[in-house]
Length: 234
Image (cartoon, rainbow, N blue to C red; front, side, top):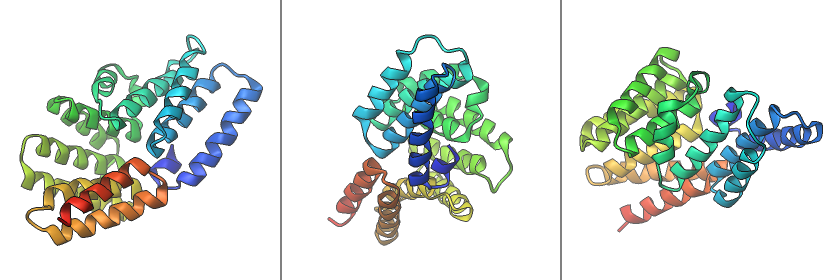
């Protein structure tokens, strides 16, 4: 998961493929669902939704897990897949019942909070942001995610100026920490809001996001950045 956060997606893919091959060979019931879930998460982030769904089905077909901490990542993989496809429902549901140990993983908590925002649960999202802030002081990945979530909540309420301020602050944290994926997503959200007031800055942020997504292999977000740039150039 750390390789995902730090933008070393090629390394994450290589490590996960090797790990999954080993756990399939050894056949440990506890390890297999977790490795498959990480594979599904990577595929969902890559935009390979069909393969992600196939891996989730495989993990669930293994029966009841011995370790709920591991199996909750299967649920998260499914929630993430649906979120990336535009449906936050599973993410909202999982946010209300997730194992606290897994909820403390910033990558998980951040996406679940975004699902809460998209699903209309602004208060739940802000509570998740509060939990993230409690994990580590700024500058930190959890802290940056908390600021990002606050920005998304402001955006959901039509408070665009406040949203842009918080998103810009979150982007500064991610840039300082060298976290290209979160930085690119946050810049893209900022650019969507800045298009009317500052189109040149919005275009620049959109291009930077597109370059980052292309390097990572995040095809869905690269397409979204390209679409925004097309809209801004009209």
